[in-house]
Image (cartoon, rainbow, N blue to C red; front, side, top):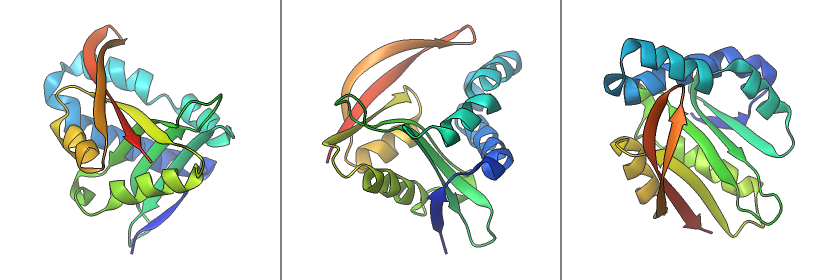
Length: 163
């Protein structure tokens, strides 16, 4: 049985472990070991997660599996100043992918924003699993941008889903 709930501060260690494992599974082959560690130090910095969990304009939800293990996490910025919610991260443990976890987390975000007209996100170009998931979830490509993190530059595909 899958349970979706808002993250609390006590979930941080589980979220960090899940995020690292999932990120390495998705992107690990693309980067050198030193680049991986630099990127993870920026993207998985725990202070940012603490702030997001406590921020009323942010949404951090977790999915718990049958053993109460955190098997998925979604973080997003909620609607503000007329802008749509923006998904920052969706991570699902590899062994739990393609089992409805990501879809359940996405539904929870949409339920949290009943007046939103759309939801947007960026997915790294080359993340075929992520791109396929988002396309199957009704998102369409709206643009391409270049981003830099920890000295590594990569392209991201901007996507949006009308609600």
